[in-house]
Image (cartoon, rainbow, N blue to C red; front, top):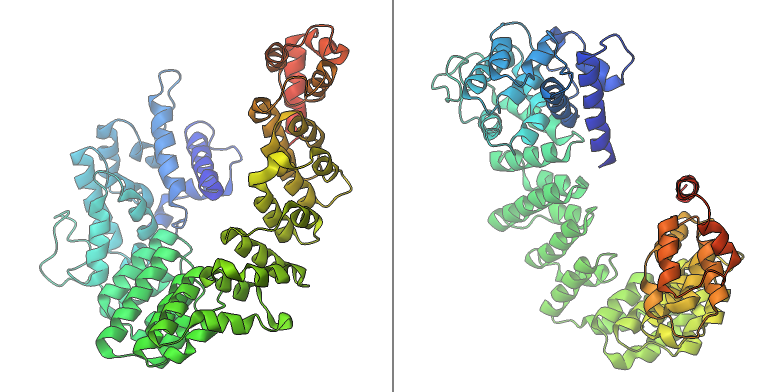
Amino acid sequence: MPLIRQDIAQGHDAALALLRRPETEVSDAARVLLRRPDSYASGRFPSHRPDVWIAFDREVRRLASRPYEPLRSNRLEARLCDPDGRIRASALAAWRNPPLPLVLIRCADWAPAVRERARRVLGRIVALDPENTLIALVPLALRLGRREHGAWAVGQLEAALSGRYSLLAAWWRPGRPSTTWSWSSLTAEQRARILDRLRATADLATRRFAARLTVADGRLGVRELARQAASEHDSPACRTWTDAALAAMAADGPDDEAVDTLLRGRIPMVRAAGVTALRRAGRAVEASRHLTDPSGLVRACARWLLRQDGGDPYTHYLGLLVGPEHVSRYAVTGFCECAPRSDAPLLSELLDHPSGVVRAAALTGLRRLDATPDDAALLPLLDDPSASVAREAGLCLRPVARRLDPEGLAARTAPDRPVHTRRAAFHLLRAQGGIAALRAAVALSADPDPGLRRVAADTVQGRSWLHALQERQAERAELGALLAASAHLLPVHRLRWWRARLGLQENDCAELDALLTRSPHDEDRRLWRSRRGLWV
């Protein structure tokens, strides 16, 4: 999302520079957008940044149609984005070399005359260099495919790359498939090179598009399909490659090399497919190797395969937990997924394991089995040097936070404690609510950790602590002092509301009275200055 927002901002900068001050300094994307239009004929434009062009088109149209000081230009780029359809059509009829991305955007125009003319111009430009131009067109065409008239370009690209007919029809017959072989048609080698380059792009939608067309083409073998699935890190594209590899093995028989490649996949879905393929390959005995996979999906598939082969996953997990020096985090997690509640003592013994991740996994398993230790055993774990152990101990204590000692938890929020200990103790204080939560939130609103500062600020500004505030639990002077200490988080009108809501009088706290007697404008300015440094 930050990159998309950056692209949109650069497109807006380019539009403003084009319409107002072409000679001013603009961003890199704006300089690319405003260069000579004849360089677009070969497709050399930032095709991996389609949001820049879409934002540029919208901003030019907005600036030209605004009711006050409309901005217009005679540049070809501005005329192609003009709100008047007649001007857009005349810019396409000029038969100059327009920017190819803007021509593609006009192919999805809402005016029929503009659409038809843009499609004719696009066919003429693409015929000059089909291979490079198609590669540059795909990312933007896929974005435009979501529009009402944007499916035409996507359909033409799919037809051209799948070899169903000649490339983009003749320019004098827009939108119709060519019935004769022309010199601008793509050969099988060209289609293969284009799809190879599209699969290597950074744009996720383009990779998914290329994967779908490559699988439909059927030119890759099962081993190459498995390699593509194992190396892909985008889940939708990975599913396409994995399903194709499994379908190929189901049709042509298992392939040990393809199965091994799937088992080495980066995404759990690929490894799970490899585990299920072991059964058809006659290698079900290897299921026990994957019982300790980091992914729960792969572990579940391995347990299923082991049961299909007549084995018992529970027995295998017990064998993995016999030697404490060989116990791993995911062995404990997998054991908890199939263990009964009667095995809670075995997990409790692992709370003294030297590895922090093993202790955290044992705590997670005890919480899942509803067999958590008592409070006296869990409270010391908040001080554990491992952040994962402290976090799991806090989750185990969350349902019973009301009965915990607030002073002991408040002591763990001191600045000399580790940040994960302060965070776990503060979450328990928030669950308690009341004056203890407010004290801790005000104290932690200046914590060195940015995340903890944000949570503390949200607690002060919210009302969760107020619902648990009991009568006579705190003195009026203390409540007023806490509100005065949180003045860097609350505006003046909120402080006045809190004072009235808590029933505080004007003479209960001198510090709060001094803050509320100042000018509201001075207080609001001071508040925003302090907030700017709160999330640094």
